[in-house]
Image 1 (tube, rainbow, N blue to C red):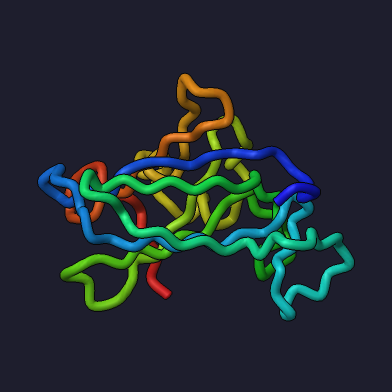
Image 2 (cartoon, one colour):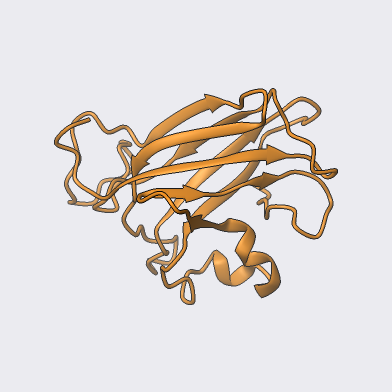
Length: 160
């Protein structure tokens, strides 16, 4: 809503299976900090500003083409469990037919420094690009596809 601090962005993409076919009945859920790096959650007790009306949560179903789209703000950095700052990112849950539990991943941003991010450093270098949203020809729009299935370009998912 108006008055929320931060860079407005749109993240859009498609959910694809291992064969490159669209997943038309998926559900994508995002959780994120605000532009100051604070979560709108009671467990985040850090003395950082909250933005009224910004919950940091969104959910959408994929369309018949496997597409999804979120209008949000670019989050600020948040600390990891060891206190080290993580690169700005959005947490993502993926729900779809055939999954016994949701898949958990992250969206990072092209142009940011991921070199010191403690989560990104646990991922083999050749696989990190699956987590990075790319800029598109449209200003403020980022493209990021989710690939489910055991292929070389499968999105990195995390065990919780």
